[in-house]
Length: 242
Image 1 (tube, helix red, strand yellow):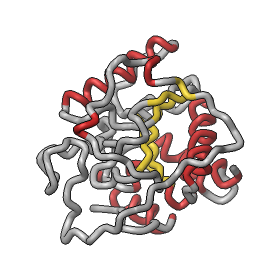
Image 2 (cartoon, rainbow, N blue to C red):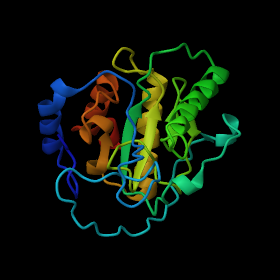
Image 3 (cartoon, rainbow, N blue to C red):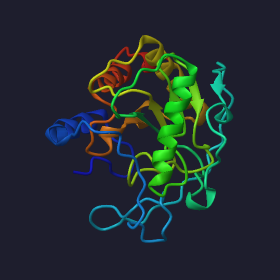
């Protein structure tokens, strides 16, 4: 069942669709958006595939210029975890950001005791995505259990994290499998602060902040992170207060 329609979803529509598809969710890794073989416009692995049913004519979205924010969040550079660059010829340009989607990695949990463990984990995810024929790691940012934010795929490139919904969609992934783990307090604090910061930077309303399962049938971002995101966007939640 496809939950996303053009334009903003109301929170009632999102939660209604979530209840209808709950039985179909699977607790596997976060199934991102590489679509080799599906694209009607070429073989690029990161291009979105066709929508279910007749494909509507899409209006081009204007380029969105990131605005300075009052709060400065330290972002660990890509060079801190990999020497490899993206294969830009396999990705479409982003041409602005108008929505945000939150994920978990959804893989079998491994101990992340420090910075070195985190960088190896991010690099292993990148390698697995590239092995599928994608341009790069599918997400634009990664948040680790210690609350650090890591630069992943360049924001100038369209991500590969929600099949059929990658255009203009900023992908933020939290390391962990939150079907079986609980996000650390440090990770949740960074989710709230960083999502808020990106909303302000790109002028994104709360109604266009999603989790993966709200756009596609999947367990991502896991029940424990999903619960936090629902509360954070609800009345008096941490994202509403920001």
